[in-house]
Amino acid sequence: MSIPIDHIIRSHRRSIALVVRPDGSLEVRAPLALPEPAIREFVTRHRAWIEKQQEHARRNPPQPAHAFRSGETFLLHGQAYPLRLVPRQRPALQFTDGEFLLAASALPTARETFTRWYRAYAARLIPGRLQALATRYGFAYKKVRLSSARTRWGSCSSLGTISISWRLVMAPEA
Image: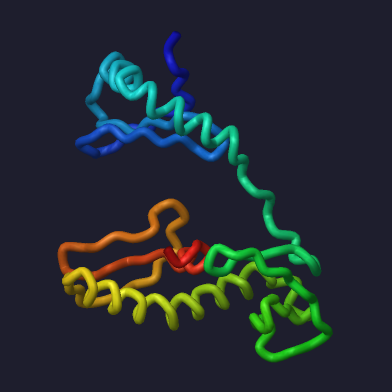
């Protein structure tokens, strides 16, 4: 039995990429001129990897979007911390004594408020951590750039720019 391909995206690329989406569907990205039988053969060759990723997706369904209610938890360094709505405060979002405090007046823009807070926190934390890792492992870089990537944690350009997703501050430090 062959693995169903849910979506094929053709573009000016040189290689084939397999993407198993969070819902378990399979997307294949392929060069424009690559015949479909070659794509199907590639998928068949990588069947074990695809099935493993699809099983992982089934076991770990996507989390629902945040509702920004008191008691809901948000991640920081791999730990879940509760949110508490407060009548008013400046800045609108703070992390204090193991909880996130959000001003009730900021609820209409809570998602953007959290994004700004996480980005600012990452901007303070990541450069120092990166410098410590560069010293420890003996590599050099010219610039650090925070990205909003959802699936790629980081990358390095040939010019020495290291791009790191600000979302990494939600993951465990290790």
